[in-house]
Image (cartoon, rainbow, N blue to C red; front, side):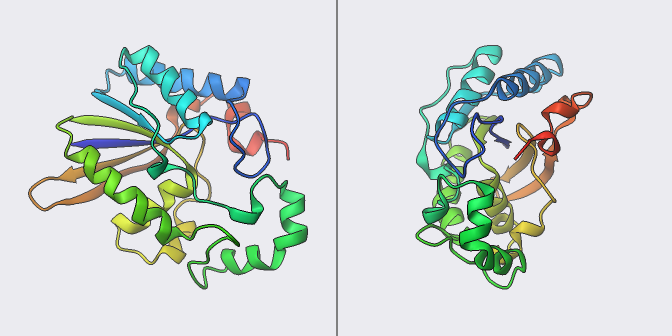
Length: 213
């Protein structure tokens, strides 16, 4: 079976991991992805999401277009817990946690955010959820989740040390699609596609590079 990991659409606040609704751009991104699935007739049998509002709203837009009732949001695939960084602006993070962020970017270790999680923590809660989805009997499931969670899942599935997960693409675009395929006989996932955002082509204003901080 295939699992489409979708990064949620753009949220309405630039602050770190606040639980807010989608922006107008985010609604547009989700709509474009929904049309891509319907126009290309990409099969989807079930839609899941994290419990955070931006993921739930993205899943709702997709579900409406695809004619599928979404499953309740599940915290197992929530974004990585940023701890003391939650609710801060990029400038505040640089001022208060600049040294920590530089250590994190150096990939020296799988560092947990102060008061929060590390990549292994995220994988340990998200992977059982993916196995449950794989065992659900659906042939094609879509899971709306988050950038940090997708990176942690990819690193774990590829048997990489979690400290290297930041080397998996420079950025993950909002509503990008990462495809996993589950091999039932061997009990593992393979990575088929990473960060596919073809539905945003021709819309530079919807790419992460256009976000004003």
